[in-house]
Length: 434
Image (cartoon, rainbow, N blue to C red; front, side):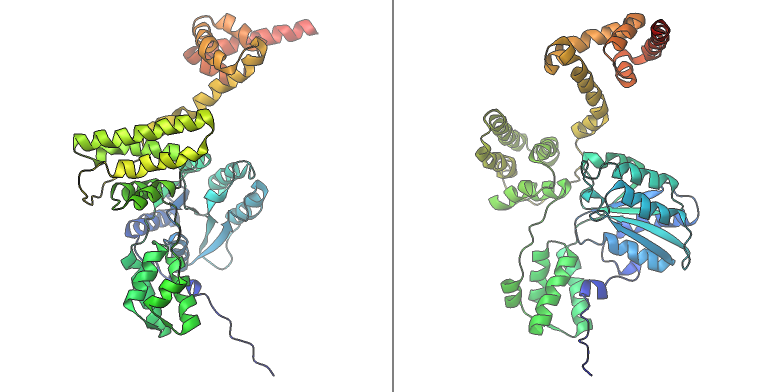
């Protein structure tokens, strides 16, 4: 009788942390997560859901699994890359959130990679998740590499945000050494350093590289690593991109910092613009950095006017090396970077701008003019009318089929008066038609 070949277990599964203490690094994130989970178990959660965010391979899902094992909780896991439609979320997650667990003290509902949800293809998914958060009897944990998409804003407002940092080379090496000892593999220290360097903080990738070389050659040497392991082309969160940009030693490092950021280049320009004066202390350095950034902005304008996208390389040259090498001499400095005030203000006014655009879209064809003209010349007068003459404003709103939200935006504090007149006129109009 032939023997079945022994099944090869991936080391990322075999050596997955079984307890919270075994999750490497992320001490602050672990403390925040445990405090939140304990508040759930006591029945007093400050937020019903949590969003763990950070770069790939830094321990987000591992922490959830380790905590579930340690606290005797069952995990109901959904990967948002596979189950992103509203009906899938309602069918699987909502059912699990309402039913009691048969074999464990409770459950954790895990929605992995929520930043993989598409606003168009997966319409309704965000609303379904928000409904799940409201109705769930169990803690809900979400993970994301990049949680800053505008589409995810409703989720960010409804959850506790816990950041995870990219792992250092030393932390990655610590785990790799532990695996080598457990597997009794001959391994050079320089080889582990090289694997860690190439992984750029992605522990999952580093472990996979280690296993591939070890099982293929029976040992791990620095020459084998250099021959077989590739550098990962990582995307950087805005905070990481800024730190790499301002501390770049070489031109290619500064350019990579802006081209590999996980936000678009115009948003990255806003981040850089706000943090130049917080990072550079010398007025001359600040001036030179802003001069480089302004040149990048000039090229963006030329691209938009002419469609000459081959100029984009110059944008990155000025945004990256131009800003980074505005300094007089190199000195590594760590600074705390915060979300730009301009982006925060844009987020707050986003709905207002959408309503204004909706009014322009409704009026433009009726007035035989452009939306731009409506926004510039018509809407300012409408706001005067709606805030000073509610009765006449109601007639305009009914004539042009303006929505209640549009009326509130135009009338401000006097919106109730306008809406009241609209209700009276609407009832009178219906009686006449009868």
